[in-house]
Length: 279
Image (cartoon, rainbow, N blue to C red; front, side, top):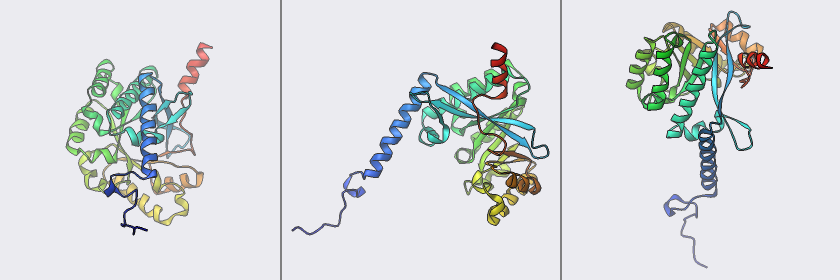
């Protein structure tokens, strides 16, 4: 019997893939194909979730629009199932463009609406995306005052100079900016004072079940203090219980978002009113 040479079939040095990596690659390819098919067939929509005022928890301050795609069976697929796979590709830029178009359409149809739309910093240089934004601001000069662009922390810090110039330009048009998933990355604090965000959204990892986590209580309170110091509104994301909401209100959070107040829905109140009017 030949002695083992110490190499495993899945060893990277052999240029062979492990069953797990093959499965992951296959899953990612399938995900990309599903999203590309949805974009090409315009099977894309937004789901809307209210962001509530802490001082009046029954009143939305604004809504956030989350991108969704439909698979071949018509099922609504949430962004969490595909965004990490496509975010760095051009397909991610196309999704951002669709999200912006759909959000602008809602803002133009509903004058009372204030809406946050997610974007990657990579989309700032994408021609279709920036053309869509500038075209809407030109058509409706006051639309910018009701638009919030949410930039994830992980993409904002990749190209900070570009983000700073873009934000300054758009803030002159009335557009507000939110730093999404604040606290998820260790470099956020370094750039916080340089970006001039209007809103920071504390990552849900530090908010869920906060009443039973002394560590998260300290972290969230520190983030709220940072937001107040830099004159930014602070949103606590993923608020799921009344107890957590009460704690965050007492801690000084300005806005609350989560299933405690409503799940994202593709049938918001203004769409329901349109449907009733047409019935």
